[in-house]
Length: 209
Length: 270
Image (cartoon, rainbow over all chains, first blue to last red; front, top):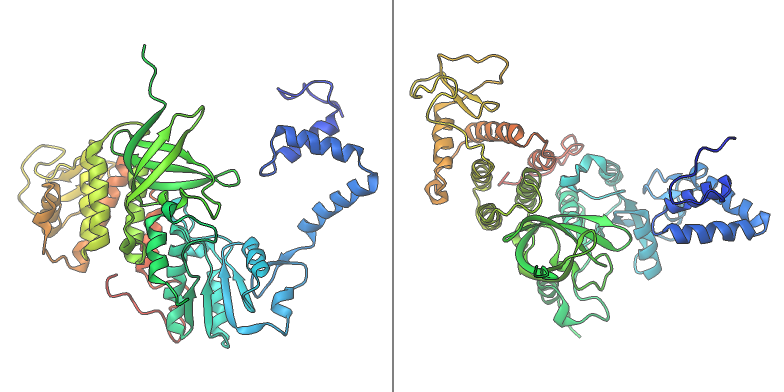
């Protein structure tokens, strides 16, 4: 393969495959040019088996994952492990924006029910409307019955609230209880620096000690 | 030459935010002193961010901003009003987002316009407290058009300058006003305009919101006014307003639910 003139900023001495990997890694979030170089040379020096395993893992996540037909989470087997688990409570569904949110909730471990991933959040100014999210799939799940509570675990910001309100408006008439994650002061926070709305909510939802 | 100050302070309304890198966001503000500006809020996606709650869209606050190499950086923020009632109600929220997007799309950065800042702030306050939400939006649209230099001509025909008294008048959004019955300009969108709509447009244009207090507008007239003003806005800013689609979808019974045995109750206000 004849290589054209090197991209600006790259010394001509860099071998083309090395440069290609640097550029590919540089596109990843949070990876700057220096990190990309370091990772590239790390892979270069690593045993071949390790490099092959990494390459195979990257190919696998594209080829061997799919969306769970029930909860829309990313999974290898459909339905996913959570939807398939007989131990879990099928009467509550926790609705999240992204698959990563499930990881956070599972790590915390308070939720024994199922999940539903919307894959985004209503953001009118960015042109993302309800029809771009997996809301229809949620409504279809609820139509099948057996669900008594939907927990809206979208982020506590404007878009997340708008999405929660929209889903609630859609779902409440179906006789399903819709709840929202509580909002208040995070552990380790400083009252002095908390914003007004957070303090107001924390007061509103105060609890007996 | 004296050095420009490193930081500046201004009251502002947050129009929108978008993600930057892992934990930062770029905040678009409409400020009282500098018009629209963009600045980075560092670390606001972290749970312990002290800034995050103050840079939410539709927040009205006081901001201290430092000049950065590329983008300016928000160093301190204090909320003045955050309009909780606006955020708890889809009908209000969807309209407020529409107003904020209009202000964003219709303006250029760093062009000071205090009147527009005031107008946006008043509009958010009205949307948070009043019930005639559509009238509030129409007033905002009409005043925005005037601010942008597209004040519609409602007294004289925009083609022949004759006074407008009769019937069969048309709204020509592309020409910026009303066309009389004698004129039929070519290649221009013409919409029939009812006498009631013309009267309301003139009243809106007077710029006195209290003159609109207690005026009952029926569904048809409200729809006509909305269509006319949206078209005029579209011609003025030459861009689509994306939030309009969300506003419409909130007003409609949501898709996919209408067919079910228990469709959603229409919200009385919509």
